[in-house]
Picture 1 (tube, rainbow, N blue to C red):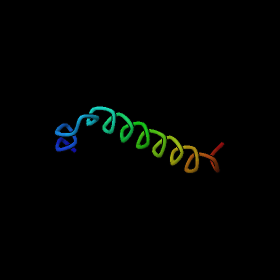
Picture 2 (tube, helix red, strand yellow):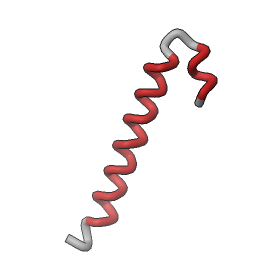
Picture 3 (cartoon, rainbow, N blue to C red):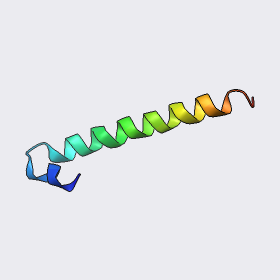
Picture 4 (spheres, rainbow, N blue to C red):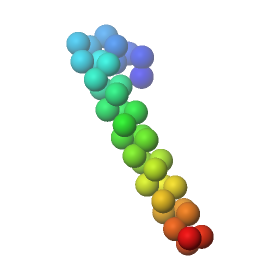
Length: 37
């Protein structure tokens, strides 16, 4: 992940990766907690 800093837009790529990961985790929690609601 740190190797992305070598690229001009490395910080942007990391931000996008973290955003996608956060959305994936949020979606996973929604799916897992859905039956309990």
